[in-house]
Amino acid sequence: MYRQNQSLLNLFRPAVKALGFELLGIDLNQNAQRSILRIYIDKDAGITLDDCVLVSRQLTGLLDVEDPIPGHYELEVSSPGLDRPLFTAEQLGKCVGKTIKLRLYEKQAGRRQYIGLLISVEEDLIRIHCDAEDIEVPLHLIDTARLVPQF
Image (cartoon, rainbow, N blue to C red; front, side):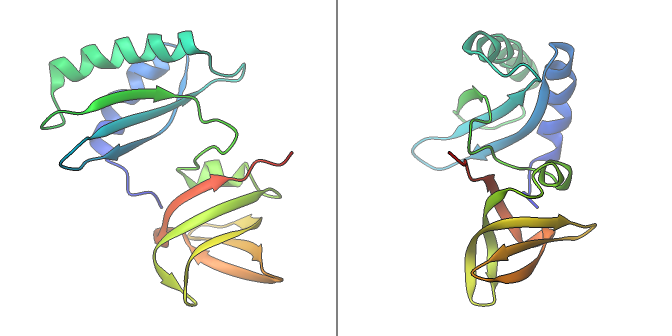
């Protein structure tokens, strides 16, 4: 699930935790025109703009010293929002009974995208109810997973 850069997670997690936040995950999109390093943080009371600025300043200093990413990139620190990305099986587990959207690395049953009710999270797969049937999706096939906001 979410093939994240473990070395970046290991670098950022202690600094984010020391500031009183949880590091949910990272998203590094690199291309020739514009690269973005997006850091998702959370806390029980929710995230404010000031929280994002505080974490951004701390991580900017860390990135300047450690220089773990070659080339130019933009750093964004963000709250997870209503359509929060789900980076781990533990985060998915907190969303059982809610609607999620999945994009897979490769097709399963002829599809790469699913939207459905998350039924369960097990050691190496999840079950979702999608299009009137229950579907098993191995965690290692999940490229992205997001909560679908319900209004």
